[in-house]
Length: 280
Image (cartoon, rainbow, N blue to C red):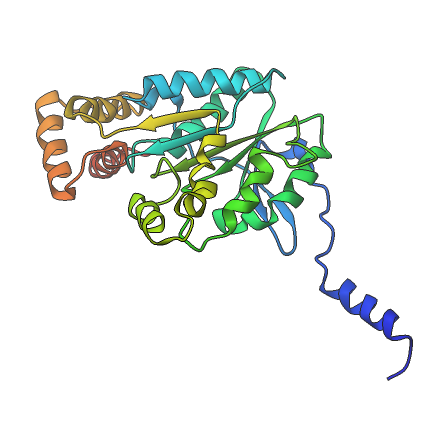
């Protein structure tokens, strides 16, 4: 082998390093997906979402998140938000619907979705978004949770606390989770019982949720709310069905699923629309 060993090492490291991100045209789309290695922001031509008025039974969470997002879009202080609680009750749907509503009101707000597995690269993403100060971004992570040996939560602190550089002024972070403390209760109790320093063993992970300025809880819906969700979908898509038939079929559908939620309501409506020949 020839050449300076240091030159060869430098060349090898350069080959291993991911290529720099080509700055996307943020004006080309309202939504983006973050993918690391190599770093890229893929534009999403059309976001899969429902209109905000169709989200029934979560009025308080809807109004709170909408107000917080409008504040942020207008350049005023706003909080990071954790949407936690029952499965299928519209947590991720609310984030996307609020983004759509804020856009409809004339605020050029962008949304960037990042998966939990890619949180280790989030510091690089923040620098890319910081370099676009003319745009404002919701950074969105769906179904966020951690296991006992998971180190991804350390990367998340870069968003919530910002480190020495601080979180970019043009970025806010919204996350959804089935768990208020982002890890199972039995795992918290187990670590407290078995660790040499029980309080320290769980404090770092449990306190992560405390760093969200907004906690918005989602709880199982009542039967009336479940039926109202389906009726709202029927009215929005012009599907005609009498109340008695709707009630009987929808309750039977939820019984076969063993659950009642916004997701189950949408699944029943999808089946109903297919049977009635209504495109959605």
